Image 1 (cartoon, one colour):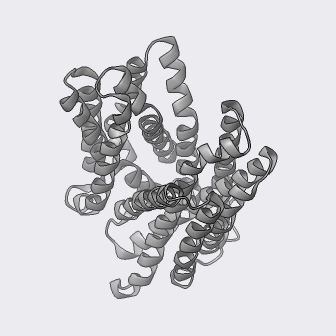
Image 2 (cartoon, one colour):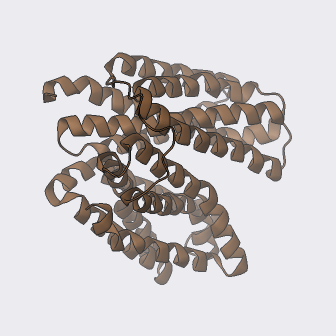
Length: 376
């Protein structure tokens, strides 16, 4: 496909990533409000969040099959519309059971959209014959900033949660509708298998994806407690670590495609892993607060382009259908987000939180070690 004919599919892919990031980030500021309105304790909140995660993983596994058979376009549309329609329902739920069902649907929409948009991104990247994946993932991060920022701003000025979710849903809808006619249409493959267990290089890619998402989830959920409990910052500044991580993660993704063209996926993955490892070492081993916090900058920068490389390689390998490979990477990655923070909490309780983060550092060593096999 000529480059001039790819402008519309590129725009559609960018809008899909932007919508996914925006939609899921709108939920986070609503958790305290839901807890108060429905009078829930932390245990019930945990179960409700599990509904969201189970819905996501269920949809991710299913989406690989449907993408192989029917293409990614209808699933992107369905997932985007699902996020848009279900977001307001989260605040209309009057019982924990109803909220659990809504969160399952919300998570399923997100999981379907996540896999399908990555499959579509692989197709667009192949047609363009140059790296584009990092930039697409960068827009997911931008969507996250915009969604969380807008929802927080609306709630802060006194707009009700119900109206705020409706406003955010209305803003997502045009993005989905604009992307709709611009998505690539794939020819149905009736011979695509209904299920394929990850094999060959896909097993390596999925394992590494699980590690990277585990690391990202741990930094999100535990970084504030880590730097406050070790005296690096006071409690009000606890969010500073994740903020620094997110800034370089986003900047790294918007420069990652150009770097991949210059040095290739193998070097990008190897040196990205090394950079993240150095970041963890700085964060955990250096007592000077200012220098230690710079470790978050290195972790975000190093981790920024590893997941895009894994998805790109999943879409171009020959061991199994690309859509099923992308689904496997996404599913194991999301499992890492769900289970990782809980595992960190377990080891922090048994040993200490810094010890748990050193264990993450050890897992992260597998990224540069397997860079050659993952990108062969």
